Length: 365
Ligand code: SF4
Image 1 (spheres, protein in one colour):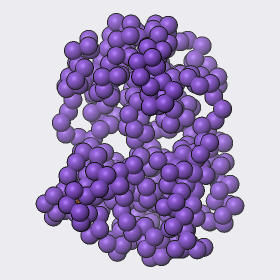
Image 2 (spheres, rainbow, N blue to C red; image 1 turned 90 degrees about the vertical axis):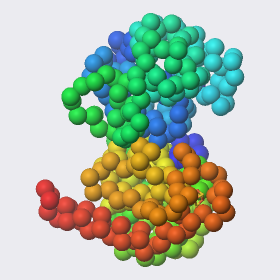
Image 3 (cartoon, rainbow, N blue to C red; image 1 turned 135 degrees about the vertical axis):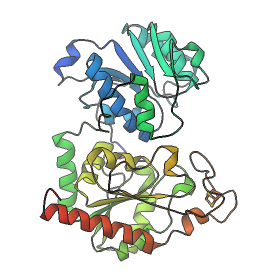
């Protein structure tokens, strides 16, 4: 998980208002409830942009971890933090959040996350229109039930909630601030990383989605590496740094989520597992080498850049074995990751890094 230990700026405990945005003066009548994982929240930003085009900036209910990510997004008027696993857990927290939503008199609520909890919040908000997917276990509570596309990228699936249009999908995007870019720049300067570097995101909430050879990869790359991640990833990042003194630098736990995205934006390439940093790179336009083990891009969460590369085991019969990747390999061998060699990943990085360098020398190519 990305985000430094005290990464969330000092903000009110439940509501993050957007004091800098003139549009917040007009309270939004449109709400999106998205309390899934960070990556899901990033992939919801095209829907936020589409709804903002139609109705003006929208309000969003999301987790504390994701709230900072959306705090300065131009399509968002207000972020309402819902700590479903902490301060707001249980029925009491749900009712408190529901009352808060009701007091804001929404006209429409959109539900990209197919959870019962989100459906209850939408119902209690009192909004007359509630739009969600027809395969949700709570679909009976929606007023508009949208078929969820079984193929395609998650971005387009989520966007289908905003109605059909011939317009191209808005980009996956983040509202990064000058302070975010400044923090990324300071990290690079303080650590003397230089302007050409590769970002590595070795962590994942799910153990089987972690490729085990990041430490060896660093030694094979032409550029220094910066490790991206949250406080949970610090021990893993420290091991990789210890194995590569002077070649690897850890930003895990030192930069917030937005600052990490700003740092990824400066990298020549991001190497990542199937996890949230992949989608941050998509948002900031950095080329990605995505390493897929127990999951596959066909699930809808792959990279979206035209030059991005996926490294995965194409001939392993047990793969994919679960939607998110199990905590441990049920077969014990974890070959979906262990068979992916350092050389395979190094080659992929070299291809993208040289393409990136050509673009830098010759913009337009
Ligand atoms: S069962 Fe196969 S796909 Fe699943 S974790 Fe093990 S090796 Fe990977």
